[in-house]
Image 1: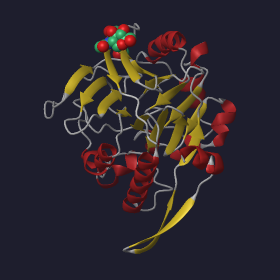
Image 2: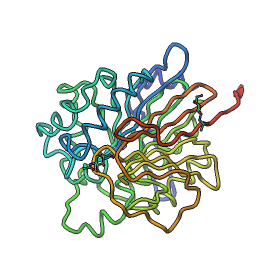
Image 3: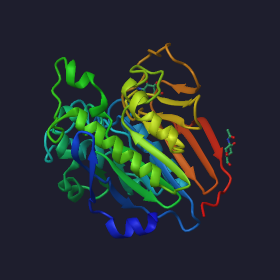
Image 4: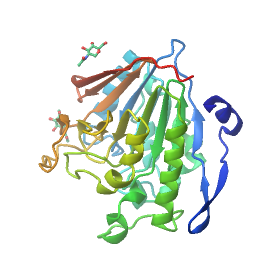
Amino acid sequence: MAVLHNKFISLHLLFLISIGYGGVFISAELQRFQHPAKDDGSLSFLVLGDWGRRGAFNQSQVAFQMGKIGEKLDIDFVVSTGDNFYDNGLTSEHDTAFEESFTKIYTAKSLQKQWYSVLGNHDYRGDAEAQLSPLLRKIDSRWLCLRSFVVNAELAEIFFVDTTPFVGMYFSETEDHTYDWRGINSQKAYVSNLLKEVELAVRESSAKWKIVVGHHAIRSVGHHGDTQELIDQLLPILQANNVDFYMNGHDHCLEHIGDSNSPIQFLTSGAGSKAWRGDIKGLNKKGLNFFYDGQGFMSVNLTPTDAEIAFYDVFGNVLHRLNTSKQLHSFI
Ligand SMILES: *[C@@H]1O[C@H](CO)[C@@H](O)[C@H](O)[C@H]1NC(C)=O
Ligand SMILES: *[C@@H]1O[C@H](CO)[C@@H](O)[C@H](O)[C@H]1NC(C)=O
């Protein structure tokens, strides 16, 4: 089913018209990309967040270690959890920060792979649409950033979700910041459509591993803490549809938190540059397995039965590991 599906609609949008209580609404199916697994059926990738600072705040050191670990694991791609360019995203698709913070920083051979990125709240403070522009892919073909999309990597399906529009504070208490809400006419309609699209996609997925990626944490003990909008609106969908991992940035740290109501593991990788904030939130430490306040990144290694996740610091030392095994199920 999933295979047929992908073959026929691959990169196109399929419009479904449904009749709701309020009348007719249109929801688009998430854009899909295919990424083949390795010949032996395994897959590995790195996860990085909150990084673009022209090499400063240890960004270059993290990049160097990513190159080494990337080579060791023979990674297939890199996932960026957003806040790609500081302080305020890109000014336009011609902003030289794109090359100065991305192309000229992640230069290792092993990192010359596809990068799949979402937008963070800081990216929305600039020209958010610049990062989505195909022109950036002409400058550096590794780059792929969209608001929400799905990567089908055979044994794993990765659902990228645009979490910034969920957060009410960015609409109501913007302080001195302006957000680029072009393309998001109504927060409520945008979020409710997106939730429908995500639910449909995770429900229909028959992948062994279901991974959801967003910028904001569902659960975090770091500076920003939990994101209540995501706990209320997104988490129930993930819990009901056997999602294995939720990966995010936003807090500039590395974290691993378990869910008390499901097997979901919450993994924060938001330590791509500025870190050492020094303020752990004491409020909700439920399920906390690991927290590191400094710079680093995460690696993910998947086989059809096992997931191995590791967190690294700026020296490439492994700080924390997590292994998960599953029985092979027959879905027929
Ligand atoms: C860079 O990393 C080292 C080692 O963790 C740390 O001591 C130093 O404070 C970091 N520099 C910055 C600017 O965060
Ligand atoms: C996870 O698996 C790897 C390799 O299979 C092993 O080296 C490591 O010790 C395991 N870690 C844990 C925490 O079980």
